[in-house]
Length: 221
Length: 221
Image (cartoon, rainbow over all chains, first blue to last red; front, top):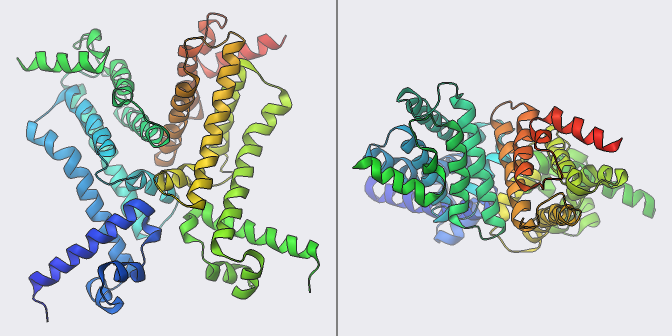
């Protein structure tokens, strides 16, 4: 009998393998049979670890969401970014996450969301929660930027979070069709931020990604 | 033995049922077993009509693409729209298609595309072809609008087609998350068209969806 440590290690291996399959081919492509083959385990051994395909799917979505938030949020928290810089950093990191192929393809969480947005059940709910958590994070950052007078009082933070996210999703779609200059997606975000910003931020700063980075750097000094 | 007419009618029924399942739950959710149950047919009877699950999936994607292009293109062709009005009408109809839930949910063809953009094989290729055909249609309309001097010569039609599509995809995503005023998505399209248009089109026309419609009507007279 494996000890708990060995068991949790095996469980981790199973989720890793399942996440690789799901990121490329979608959760629908996960089957105990395929996993058993790839991991050279017995189907009954796999069942022992997860009990059901739904439990396995849930563990995969949880792992994917950890990758997503770890990659996007942790560096921003560590740097203690606030104001419009935080809003920018969230969008910039979201694009990094896609461009670096941390979870390759367009499935997590965009394709998965488009597929399950009108579905009910525990797995669709879990996927929708990840996407709502993202919108919530962005909305909070916008509200905070409003309080420190870098985003206009008149801005509806919920609506702005959806619009910024819409730009990101559209950029991801374009990148899947054809090579898109990474600065092009970011310029679209800057154009939107210019519309949201107060006069505290000089308009020139939004002219290009380089101008924006130079402006942020000048603030730090 | 059913005659060929009965056979093609049954085939049609099978594809209809399969399309309903796939639009809601994705192609991955299609199984001969589930279809046999919903249609009260034998699995072997289903196989007789399609030979393989892949053939059935291919027929479903083809049917979905007919819905898509029939809904979006046919009315525009019938009205013989050209120039920037044609570009607008393509985007407007795309949004109609989503908002009217002709194929409910976000799967066809957005979710499907996000899921399969990095996959190979006949079904992913077929899905990617539908999306490329859409971009191609939009690009042709932009090129035609350039030739009749309504879109600037300097515009890269391929890039503009991707950017307009990105706005549409982002709008669809927002609509799945929260109710979005239909005019909001269309205003974003108009803002982009304003950037692309020549001085032939008065800037005021892009100010709102109503202003745009009034402008188009005034051109007809």
